[in-house]
Image (cartoon, rainbow, N blue to C red):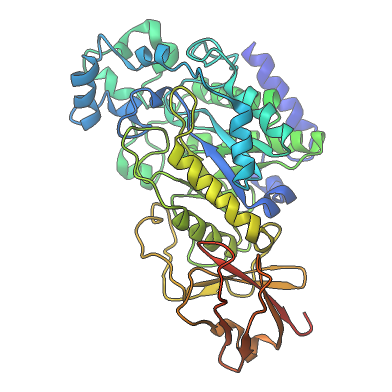
Length: 485
């Protein structure tokens, strides 16, 4: 069966137009829905929401002696030989999971695409996987979570994608092989295996040749990922970092050719997200985890981050970002030709925590007023100005100072230039990038406001007086008309 399925994959690739080579894949172009949509919702929902401790890596860390997760697990649930990760599954029921309510919330937030986790590192598939018994269809909620959400999202006109974290499963449960635990019980190999030695931190960050997965695992990875594409017609597939391992290179080429050819057959735009240097530039869409770029990247890129600062999945002691922080980061990302994939972590019963719903709805209200300056826009000759420095790289989005009223970001669409101000000044905004050298300003209006805008321009700057009334909260967009533009 595996040989037949692999041959079917090869047949799709052979039919073109893309071949399984970086040279062929270099002709890839990100689809219009992605370039214009700007905002997606990520959903980390899985068995890890039941222990709800620390973060979604609980499944691994509960087997690593010396970690707080290990100590918490033994104190709360008993030794891992008697109560392992598998024993959380019966409590993962999703009895209040309402895919239509989720889709409605995401639509109201202003999202244009939705990306649930299809399988996290823990090996529990949230979809109808033909290659595993450890799935949400057969255990826990006993429903096809991915399939049900796909149908609900598409009913509202949103693009549907999935994430796969399967690559890291090769070594994810290796801690359980070093002491008496249920990871060593062959009855549960389908969930915990292969549990091979994890790569060292040094090679994780450099050569990526440590602990190579074998052909059986790599074939299984390819089959699972292609099955997700065919079963759910996914238009976006997000990958975590370990696909950067050298052993994955020919499999990444095959998968990319497969997805891109399926997209051509189905006449729908498709995309792959990758981190670090797993794909050559221009063959897929570059993604930065919990971080941003310091400047414009001419090729579309993406930030993936969560509303919670401390976890992607549900935990009991979340530390949430404010709506203002999320919106400001979103504006900064868009001004640099990026998109934002914003994560929520539902509870084990399938409800999305109220603080996360509140941030999403606040984001949606802001976009109702200012979406013209976001959707369908492109970057200007400079992304912005202001005193707040944004560092390129991952895991930086909570490490800098908050944006101020002196921080301005620009976008363009057609003849329009938008200046989005990230705070409300005491008197006026001074936008030095729109001094006389930028061209003659012939008109300024404020999105969401009927008030006339008082402004002036000289060689040094465009100055806009703060109106009497704010049209919204968080950030304020001005539509600027330049002569001859």
